[in-house]
Image (cartoon, rainbow, N blue to C red; front, side, top):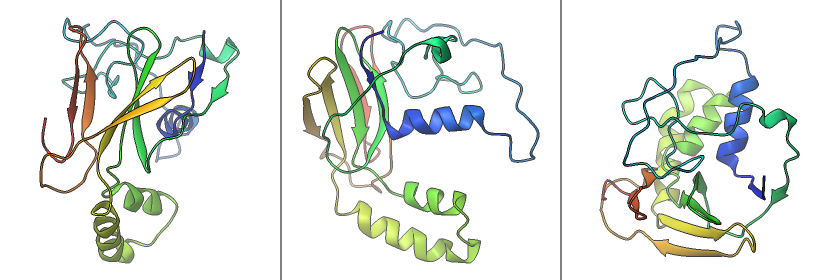
Length: 179
């Protein structure tokens, strides 16, 4: 396996997979694999959802024996708030970012912030999100050089959308409720 992009999203996935459920009981992994979609590129991670309960999930992801592989961390310099990571064709990796609205609030609540702080956290998150522009970054996995494309369309809240690496070779991104 060539270089591996260590993104906060992938770290969060690893933590979520090893953490017990909110009830304290261990989670039983599902053996259900979503049907492959002809729209998805044939890569390990063409969209951010690989969970079978979603209607747009993809039968993809890291191999089941990833724990036995030697992984390497490599870093790419990106604009603020990289959110989702994707694997494209060839040596291309993609990141959708610059859209922090409410993500920092969710993190604060997970870390134990009292529910009474939610209105303040929402306002703070909104103000911060208004200072950033969503973006898609293409990262060359060999050099880790990144090129970014600002997603300037749309006027809704700067909340994380999503990206799809399509089988036709194009990327489809949603930012600020605009495709």
